[in-house]
Amino acid sequence: MEEIGFLGMGIMGKAMAVNLLRHGFKVTVWNRTLSRCDELVQHGASVGETPAAVVKKCKYTIAMLSDPAAALSVVFDKDGALEQICGGKGYIDMSTVDADTSSKISEAITSKGGSFVEAPVSGSKKPAEDGQLVILAAGDKALYDQLLPAFDVLGKKSFFLGQVGNGAKMKLVVNMIMGSMMNAFSEGIVLAHKSGLDPHTLLDVLDLGAIANPMFKMKGPAMIKNSYPPAFPLKHQQKDMRLALSLGDENAVPMPVAAAANEAFKKARSLGLGDHDFSAVFETVSKGA
Image (tube, rainbow, N blue to C red; front, side, top):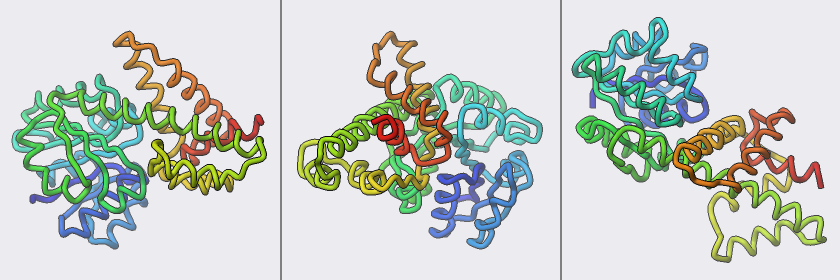
């Protein structure tokens, strides 16, 4: 493939860019704090001074940013990606944003002759490092097909979901379910402990039953130790709950479980846990019990 630009060197972006480099892709990276690109240079990456500079150099540019405001800023601000978008350039936004944000970016890119794919991912730090993400793409099918060699490195499965907005919506539904599950899991661990049961035995029982899942198995032991190394920061999970609830409003879908989960994540943010892993919502139950 042509050289790939990569905007955003957070937990996910850095792991994904390193993966591409390991598999022989040429990659030019950018981050708002440029020093965060230093580690990537050691893996063979080049550094672009601005998003515009990256887009000018690369046929394909991937963005992996923290929220809708950051995704819009990188495109529309001075020295943003849009300044260098033209025919033959592809822009791929893998950030988790709402469908409206994705549509705004798509319209801007295509109005200048570029092509656009939204491709948010299901998965956190470890799957990103291991190339085991699930990619939820929508938009320009021709660009999607061109990107499959890169997507096959970044993920274990890619879905093409049709028109722009569908990828964003699917990701919000997935994260809304995940956030709601994490709250129920937290309550279960605390209830087991307060009832005189061994929480580790609870994990073993769950892992052998119909609700066994990798998230409980991966997060449970650390939660019992009140340890929350950030694979997916809690502040981003709360943002996704908020966006999912807004999608529910648009479609008149009652979501009382998700709404309660969102309040718990907001409580956790007020306790200063926003930069911890989203499993730190456990503290809102354990501290109150």
